Length: 489
Image (cartoon, rainbow, N blue to C red; front, side):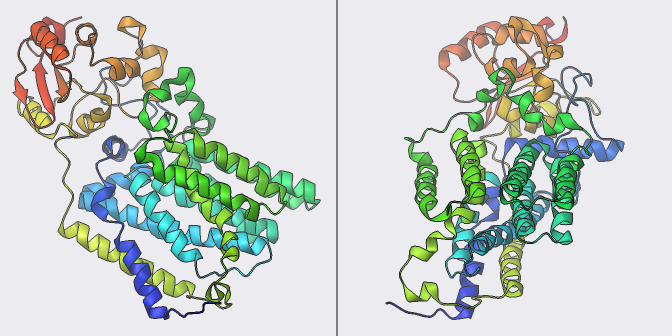
């Protein structure tokens, strides 16, 4: 059999090098980040947790479920203090805990099956998975935090099932509460994992009063968040009438598309791990069904398959015949791993402070908002109608919007308007032949039309509204401040 040795110093260099591949500038320019920061700033400035939507055409009357308030009050002061590099500081901390969590997830999987926890391929595999997660999901959004929280919750849950120590139970309860306050929309995953563990304990006849109390506390602690049970069941709000399917990341995955080849390969790899990883264990079987369901549903939920692939793949490495991959011993100490991860992430932090990211003026109305704000009196917020993906930026810059990425306030009956559409629907469908009707109903001060719109539609709008008053890199600005369409019911 082939046998070779890798010096530990070279292993450390590889760890740092892989971390450096997660280039910081690619963690920005997500439309949701802007309104998260603005909502966080508002809550800090006003000393309150929001239960209504702010900076909208409707004033403050639309109800809002504060299902991500913990992330918002954390990211807002970081941005205020350091700008976009401050947001990356949070990203780096989340990456640190995610990599450690994915690595530990693989080890606990091997431990459950009676194998040696360490394996030479486990850490590189966790790092490679982290790269994909970073580039696709770490964009200044709450899933940065909830990703590592869910992974670590699962780690402690499995450790608790192996040995019911109080420290594992405490960690589970704390992580359940934190997830409910930082990203309540994914808390249901924790609830389901806990239910699966309870069922496993019943099958194994290891259930007792103490374990039952711990599991019940994991469930009940989640209610201790500002939005209560509405936050925990947020998914039911955004999926009502399939409103969520109007957003790209909620739509079904097109596996035949070239851009989705990595997702297709992951699905095939996941299938290859199952003959090795299930081992006749009921818990693993139920987990496989859950992760498979989430993984194939849509891009947004495909994240869970990436998060849990180390758990299923950890035993697959045993099938590799090379002698080196079977040798015992600790390949790298946990303390050394933490130092290497910290070193790589600090280099990335240094880079982003030296070369701060710039908002892409082609994707967001940077120039257009500069123009609008120059024409707006100090202390006023213009009503600006822009495409759904740009509205968060408009709100962040100082405009009021018809709808932003929070979605839940804008699918309510209170937001119903012309054509029988909610504000969310008018925002999504508005840049069409129906734009004049929406403008006449919602009375924006300005409309920002992105470049790339069909010539026929644009010419029709010019006939209705007159020539745009400004054209920037992102699009054109129509002015309604002096017309009855923009200022009167």
